[in-house]
Length: 162
Image 1 (cartoon, rainbow, N blue to C red):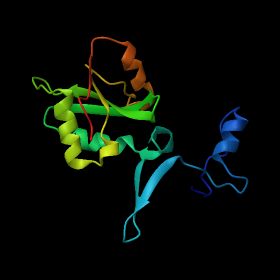
Image 2: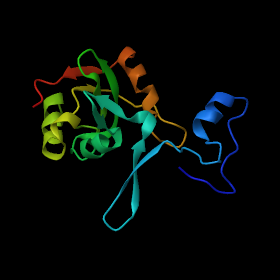
Image 3: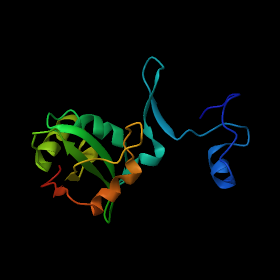
């Protein structure tokens, strides 16, 4: 939460969104999720709206994306939620491969297993030609699910995640 003389006053013509974001005493909920290190420094780890809730565990897409982009075949990745009847949501990775590179879902998952807790490893991987981005090049996570309905792409379920 932040407060100051230059904090926004509210959303134009949207009283509900304003009430949800700004406390009566003018504190603004930014929607950012942070962690504090042992020296008292804060680090933004993701956005609350982007968090994936899997069987009661909080998963931050940015953490998974940082791991997957470290795979030598990956040029770009976006991670988003996918509804799951048993876990509520699962993490799904949408991956653009580097030109001339190849990878399959299991190689991506094996890479993730080395760097992430088991519950954070994506349960589904989809290779796509491009990701939805803003004009500044930031991945629009809320639009990732639209790739499920657009071709060409190859969707691969993971063999098993332990």
